[in-house]
Image (cartoon, rainbow, N blue to C red; front, top):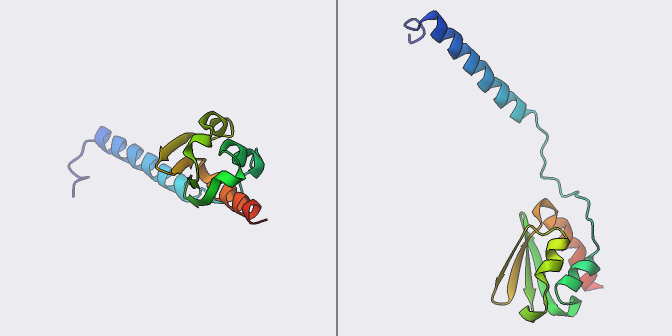
Length: 119
């Protein structure tokens, strides 16, 4: 067995490292799941639509994990600075779609904005 060939100081070091490893594993197992969609929004859907060039400029919106995918009618009308002020940590524009990173709140933002669009 490999422990029988170790020196005393080597065994002590092994058990210390093993204890640290177990502590990390146990700490991560006990963490509650943080994938909840209940994140407090700091803005209203109207603020988002204003940053996107108005509600009439938005054709479709859906969320995917931490991102908000928005299909726009006119890409010249959205304001990246306003989106950043709303909390977007990243914005990527392509063709007639923009991808906005809002983190875990993206699903809630998408749901509220889609509800507003259907009214």
